[in-house]
Amino acid sequence: MHAISSAPNISSHRLGELLERLAHFGRTANDGLNRVAASREDGAARDFLCHWLRHQGCRVCVDGVGNIYGIFEIASPGAPVVLTGSHLDSQPGGGRFDGVYGVAAGCEALASIRELARTHSQPISYNVGVVSWTNEEGARFAPSCLGSGVYAGRYTPEFALSRADGDGVTLGNALADIGYLGEDASPRAVAAYIEAHIEQGPVLEREQRVIGVVEGNWGTTKYIADITGAASHTGPTPMADRRDALLAAARLILACRAMADASQEQLLTSVGRLDIRPNSTNVVAGHVRLYAEFRALDQPTLDASCRHFEQEAAIAAESANVTVELDRVTDRRAGKFDPELCQLIEQVAADRHYPAMRLNTIAGHDAISMRDVCPSAMIFVPSAGGISHNEAEYTEPQHLEAGATVLTRVLWSLLTRRHPA
Image (cartoon, rainbow, N blue to C red; front, side, top):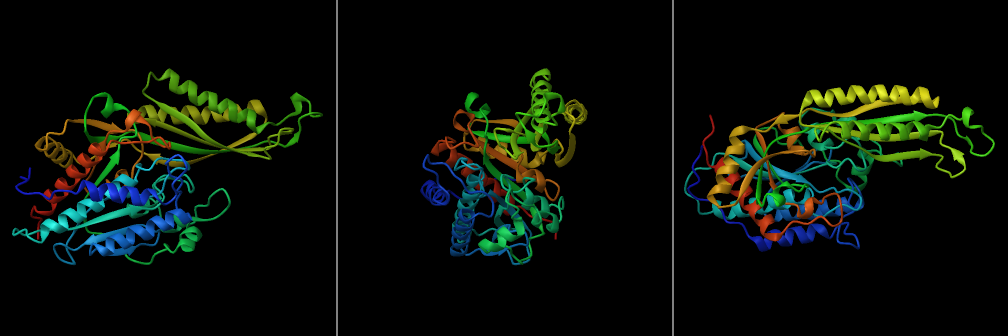
């Protein structure tokens, strides 16, 4: 493992100021965020980020799906890049740290590294960059992690740009409207990717640890179920004659919960959204679009749950006399992050006397996409009460500082090690 002989020191004040400035765009009355992907609020946050990066001397580029890269050419214009970052988009009524912390911590790392590089006498082998990925949350455009998915080759740009929100607006049109349908080439020679993130769960706080070394991820499968029956009057239509799409949806919701309850915490399921038409109190629902997801650390468990859900969909369709069409929009396999990077994160945390532990992420992140491209890893910091995707989301300032410190020192260690010619 590479020795860390010298390392940059971060500015906690600058980090806090970055987070506060970014929280301004889409801030809610309860100090949360409503900044869904490619909205006007997202565009304003992107403008601020690009201005900040250019002021730091970074080369800024925006690719064809709106991913923003700020590259500090600390070695040479053609050198490979050590990349960090996360995302700026939020859930509707979400928190101000989810994703944004990884971007702000990456920016602070770049600024600190830039300061040290001015006086550092040893050769630096890599450039360093920060990225803000498009549509990580998937709240407006499904599936999630679209920007990093395109970069990693999981999706084509055409597929990503054609995704439409509930009003029929495509991601491509929305990005064009805010000026972020870019034409720049994305950096391809990426030597490593490190993402800092809030945990979004209770484990670190419960175990009184400051740094989470993320070893791997739970697998996740998401479905969109289109359930089609027939709209009819809720008064004159006999119960036996109804083709109630909402009845089939209700049965699927209960089936998802029953599967999770039977798994002894090995499977997590959820139905988080229903789009109902015509959505009137005295009309039998003619169509329901249902969004279901399944998560498990063990891939065979996840695969079995998906087969069971598809069987339940067929049963629900027959019992309610409706049709159910399933679209499997996300199929993220369980997997592991780079073991050498995990070891380096653990070493840096120990050097700084930050209590650390290994864990797996249940939530999806852009780092999972990047794992297909280059050695990748994640650093978690505690979430107060385990709360996330909620305006009450919070992480203590000293924990934010600790995570940014570990990120910066890990990046510095990677930048100053030699790479093959």
